Image 1 (cartoon, rainbow, N blue to C red):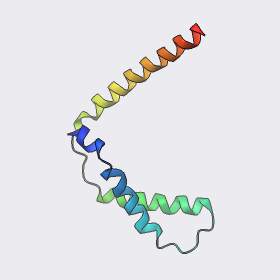
Image 2: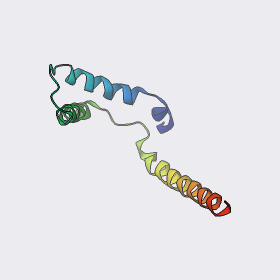
Image 3: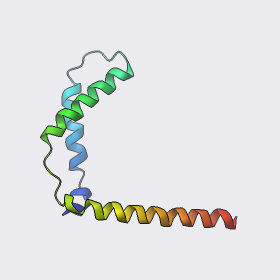
Image 4: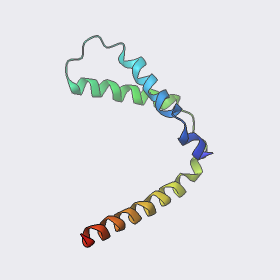
Length: 84
């Protein structure tokens, strides 16, 4: 279930739609920090509307796998640097 949820772009599109809906009300963007504040407000607003991610119980397994993979890649890069 987690794989199916993460393979879809719906999560990102939903967040982008929420940001677009909140920020379209702003008529004048004065500074970059103002834009960041509005985007943060939109993300907080969108957070309340999100449902629970299907397969969320498997996230710890995903994190363990990604950490192990990262260590493998780092070892491979280190070995290449030592060989060069």
